[in-house]
Amino acid sequence: MKNIHLIAAARPNFMKIAPLYHALSRESWCRASIVHTGQHYDPNMSDAFFRDLAMPKPHFHLEIGSGSHAEQTGGVMMAYEKVAVAEKPDWIVVVGDVNSTAACAMVGAKLWIPVVHLEAGLRSRDRRMPEEINRLVTDAIADVLWTPSRDGDENLLREGVPAERIECIGNIMIDSYEMMRGAIEADATRGGLGLEAGGYGVVTLHRPSNVDTREALAPLVGALLEVSRRVPLVFAVHPRTRKKLQEFGLMERLAGSGTIRVVDPLGYIQFMNLVTGARVVITDSGGVQEETTYLGIPCLTLRENTERPVTVTEGSNRLVQPGALVAALDAVLARPGRAGRIPELWDGHAADRAVASLKRRSGVAA
Ligand code: UD1
Ligand code: UDP
Image (cartoon, rainbow, N blue to C red; front, side, top):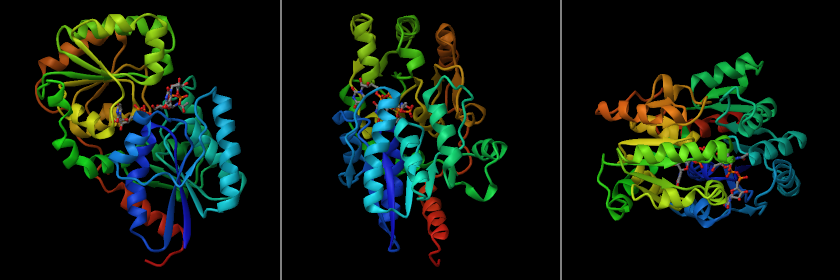
């Protein structure tokens, strides 16, 4: 019986481990355990997703919490090393690009436990992003690299990763969406906020480059206010962003506008209920760029670059500077209908391909 650890830490990780956890739980050759590092801990940044995605309580909880990059990364390493030494997993699966991803990958590599990176190969080529450092570190030491799209394979091959370690399994976020589609469609969040499908925009922001300084955040708030005079907005505010909006005295401008509904972070089903009915999404989230591409909903990404280029070249995503947001919104409003197309292997079956890969690499007969 192979013992597999699935590492989850922060909001976007839960949608990536849930389909894999459920798929592995149906197999008889392995036992999957969820290790929650505790990087995200508020109920609406963590527990809500276990409930929405029908996952059990984490089998191990490291309770690391917030801190500087070094504190968080080091804390996760120290705590997870103890668990890994005691439990001796046969595989450690890390997902995405958060601090806990790189930390647990390093623990595994140094204990000679094979590490799999789910969502490998993505590159923004912007090393000011903490996530880019985490991606580079994780991919350099992982034994198996599961990519969501072909550009990921190309990036890894260019960096000298042996081809036999790389497998394009597709985008597992789409598995989560398809798994929960019925509940998302039946959910009443949109109606509860008095919104009609196609008549509003959804906003999320949390990248340090956008929210950590007043110089970046104040013009963004101004641009959102202007956009909201054309289309009403719902802004689900990430805890990092809430803290900064309050610190810079910007929260009143947003919440008092009458055109922007400021709400707390939402559970997955509630948030996706809003997204599926949105006319436009304005974000700096990685996952949301992908979900809108799958749904064909126009997405305006407030970033200079993206590690997910297929969302722009094939999907419905467009990178915009804050100063160009209103013009970009006008262009979206002038064009009705779905935008873009769905990238290859974003089909709801990434978890099946991941299980087949692990099974084969574990030497289990088909
Ligand atoms: C982290 C990830 C980022 C990911 C994001 C998803 C890193 C370096 N960053 O960013 O890649 O896109 O999660 O949402 O790993 N906080 C709370 N409650 C919580 C969690 C955080 O109040 O449950 C507040 C704390 O003040 C904390 C701050 O948010 O200091 C930032 O949290 P942290 O996990 O360090 O980074 P995120 O911005 O959430
Ligand atoms: N999301 C959510 N509730 C919210 C905002 C986002 O459930 O209020 C989901 C979203 O659908 C996506 C994931 O969170 O699946 C993206 O996480 P986040 O933007 O925090 O991180 P990133 O993808 O940028 O790393």
